[in-house]
Image 1 (tube, protein in one colour):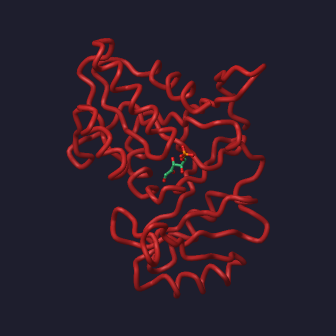
Image 2: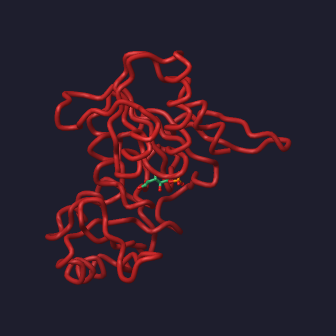
Length: 231
Ligand code: 5RP
């Protein structure tokens, strides 16, 4: 499912574009498909903007030319994965702790294309997938207390193959937050969380997504469709 949706995303790319390169396993497949198209000469003069060390390293390994976000007035198209997509195309991202740079890139993109498999489609956000919140290292306990006053339970994301917590690309920590009733008003929650002292950014992507490509299995064959946004 992830491979077909990654390949479908690359069909939206045209030569001469500046592309936001997302993070996560689906975005990684998309970056590999992009490299194949560049290598074969089908796509020319592409420049990528990385959303994480993961996408930067992959692009460098695959000889995709990179350009720094700070040097750009805008990005033509950003392609990224997501952890949850609701019917209005509001998202939870940050399963890979990359949502700070992912949101910067998405905000500078003329178009944001999201690539997911259908397990990521939900009616309401945050019923099961916790909202990632990046916090300054010495603020995590204080932020946790404020979130608990907002009826959210949070846990510090712990690393695997390293003792202690996950440290983000920016050197911060991640709180994963589940609200008692999920997130009904993403715009409101996005702003309230980002207003807590010590919070750098949260994984709610509100009113940023232009198009979603969904991979699913139909009659044992992986297919891709593009749902319309519910108003
Ligand atoms: C990383 C992200 C990813 O895009 C999101 O976690 C989806 O990843 P995957 O395609 O591996 O399921 O937001 O911070």
